[in-house]
Image (cartoon, rainbow, N blue to C red; front, top):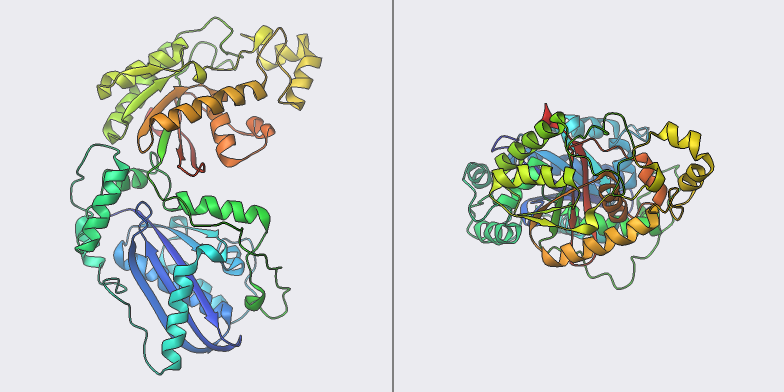
Length: 462
């Protein structure tokens, strides 16, 4: 678990040049990932420069502001510059001599492992863009840019660092109340961390940042076009990506508290280490001795975090035993939900993949090729499982809006929830690995979008 001074923040940065090269400036903002509140702003007129140089200077300023606030933070950088994001992510080479030292400077602010980069459409980077234009306007008038109101670039640093050591208040996992407390605290320049922010810090039970909301829209726009409008920002000698308008009807992401499902796969049974098909149509095995130990270990880990507000379990024995171990530690009841049961593998129940290949080779090939194909002997197709799981998801999301709920279930339902949240094709089910007693998380928002934290985390078992 991170130290009290450690947390994740969002940095959004931009830069612009009126002439390319021409009078240029940058803007950067540091945001709270849970509430979306502005923690710091930075902007500056930098004289005559190119768009790309201004963008890099904005990145450096944003990272520096984040470090002043939280020296031990992990940082999620969001920019509409495809060039900067790809270069800082190491996927594109940095060829321009003016940008190499700026990229190196940006890379020194935080250790590389604590910064990740995401390209976002221009429409989602308006705050940083506004700051950059304010800085250029100020420079044109021969004055320095100054922050407005109480968002002076680093004035909140001391308050934020002090607040990081305050105890959380309110019921565990109450993200909505936590967000409200954070907003009120910022208004009085005293930041009180909520349980919701601690959940993000733990990296497990809350959506990652306002990432959660805004990255969803980012992905939707990215699906329509590879790059946002950047024709005026393209470096010399490189072809500018084609511009595309923002999707019509866009009104901004839903920032309401999500229903967060912590997805726990049951502990081991005797069939698990042998990698045998074990669905809802077989012998309904109990947890093995190893599985019981895993259930106790995950119960201890969840109790230590103190964020789970409800427990819902598959009706199968191995899940109910796992859920019971957690419930006993948390003092919660277990709700049984049939929609969370594992796939019925028909005649394949209890067999290894090789045994199925030997006996039912044609049926197995059909199953691997199409989600509509069912296992031999009246089993359940992945398409049928997806319909069942989606209906269950919708019921649980409506019933637990704004809450953090532990779902104790199986490989296929967990993979299906993740697949549907990502909008991934059915064949992606065969490309995920999910260990026994591992934990992942999906947050569902009122606008129908979702944010996935696929951890396959078994650190609590070591």
